[in-house]
Length: 595
Image (cartoon, rainbow, N blue to C red; front, side):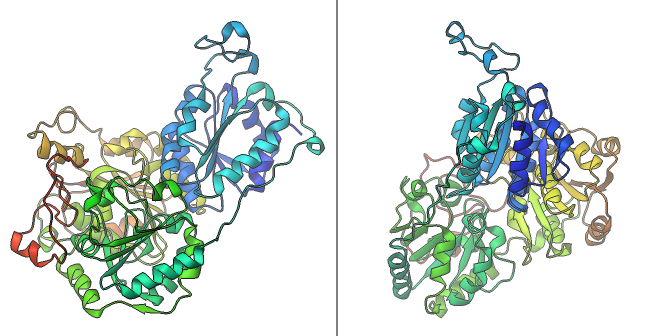
């Protein structure tokens, strides 16, 4: 069999139905194999970065796995931002890069060892990709292709998942291989449950001694495919629950004992819950500084922290945050045994206090709903969430509009809500929405974007249009980079360099017409719900330009090195003190929290 045909057979065996690609000289022989294989198709993308982001979302939602194919040099380097999204959010996927012929590589002969480039578009993509992949490898002989593919897949999907990259020189792509004379790869996957039972017993005993426990649900719930275990967890453990951003869709709005999302842009209620607790069970969150604040030692400072994570390095990073108990196991294995314990109900007064915080500190204020000029993004996102159904998938981009979306969106049970939370690049939501719609058989996808972010991968509007995908794109348009402007206002005396000043937008109405996409502009709150229902009812793509204030703020947010319970705008000191059970601490004025 030809190597190029074998690669498609391999992907077919792994249930990959669509490959996201842009062709080029160095990958042409592999792409040509699609002409001989009718069981697997490709999606022609507008940019390699977009293809990697489509693959990322496809893998999050799809039947199993995702793949891209690109040419050498710029084709390969363009993948890197999208690959980084998958790396930081633990999303499996395989990326095939074409490469120049072996004899054209630098160092192929002694005299070219230190030559910068020999072959046209030759680039050492393997060295570049190694820091953001679980495995990156350049093929050395056609005979090792089956072995390396099996190895790459095994590494990508085992343990903490992540992307892998295979670099294939052109001369190997068109070689024949004898499938009966090839080295077989043996899976390295190992299930280690040693001492898990003891750690679960210790955790349960800590709950029995606790007066103010809380459970944090992070992105590890979805990554470990443990979502189906949550209902049993909620019924067994009557305690307050909070989520990280990447765990937001683990709970739904109005769910009993769900308090909200935590962190530097978290809800006041959820942050008060965590910061006043005496026991934190952290399931599948790496507790980065977007959760803990710039001073990790101030996070849950009176609580014993029990963390469950498949990645031992996440458990050992410290940085001022110390885990009382480290449980280095797969989240699914942990939950399967943890929910077998006897039912636990925490102190009624603690549950009541946490739920009162949720009532007293809503994410969307009444005054925002009454805004008369332009559109308030919090009210818009809340209203959008009300008219969506339980099967909808919501993908947000980055920056201010991502923050407004996370803060104000009211999740319904069954919905998915995600972004590239770890890497958080501008331009993710549009290509990710395309990948998501393709993974879910052309399902409607809700894309929440920004006026600046949409432009980064605006070429993918053509990919959307030519594939007739019913994606609804909502641009929260403040004519600039809102989250940066707020940062500059706080720390740089309102010098809005390259955020308000120097930034401009194209005419999105004309852009929509060019790509044959329906366009709507929403200028105020008048008949907002009816307008959204009409937009959602169509079976075609829609681009909705939502005009918001240029100086619209993110509220609340952490600033000036304060602990996460003390969000800005600051509560009166009397009100703040009334909400604190644990000892208060001063802010660290040396810390500037990232925008």
